[in-house]
Image (cartoon, rainbow, N blue to C red; front, side, top):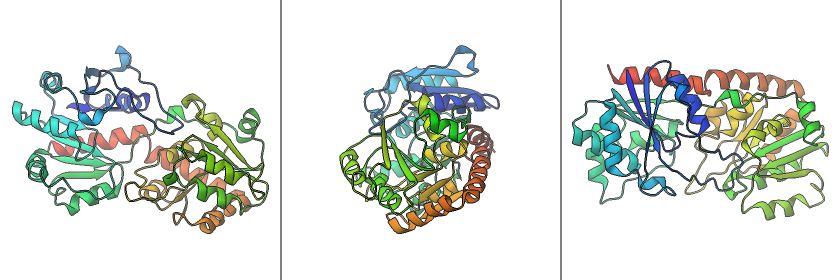
Length: 379
């Protein structure tokens, strides 16, 4: 089975970990941007772009973007057409949203060349959307050529179903794949000593210091915990000043530690210090949590997770963590206090998380489930 993946992030080492599992089951070719400057505003773990070695066992085909600073404008059409035609795949999988311009380009090329390849996309977008009135008939006509869709969360599929775009296509929720080789946890006390974070109980928060990430809720909740509980925030962003001002008040003074941006290779060192990871995201009119990739990263490091009920967080955590209503300081404080007072509960959740990330949230799981999905497309 020949599979062609088109991914704007395909040169990231995380994606390459997935490709290494896919290559064992399919003849894999990956189209990636020739040059791409990703924007990771306020995030703690932006990755450098790397080309895989020739021995990786799959083909990597660089194609120029129209604008290397804005991948949403798509690839240059004729180089993309040439790359697709040269590969004659059985399945084309566009790792982009259901309304992405790259998917539209691929649909156009498929029809232009008369390809019989099955076509699918992989979506994250979980807010309801509508095509612009001018383009709605065009998109609905083009979608007749889409044979399947996978998504990182259930709401992405539900939104397409509400638009009558899902059936009769093959569809499946397949969680994004975390490369576990990058997240091997270290012994907690040793990690705390190495990072000079030797506090009895440490609540971690990772991500952009943005309003929708809810770290103000987290600090208010930590203030409700016993003084031995401290908080460490990894990341930067426009909320940093406000959060530092909150952390300076008497009920939190000396208990909140701002690490700023941390290189990707150092994330495990810090994550291994956490007694719990908090993911207090808040839904806005234009955003809600689509996956929360720090969740499986923490699970892989044997760290229990407490998350809000924003977007996909509850389904990603499953029964391997605790959930609270987004924006509810008291409820978050109560969930964190359970783990402060009951270390055996924290150990149990960490063990469940470790199993869950291996079974459902790993790069290997992502690849295996997609191979089954590709075979379904070809039936």
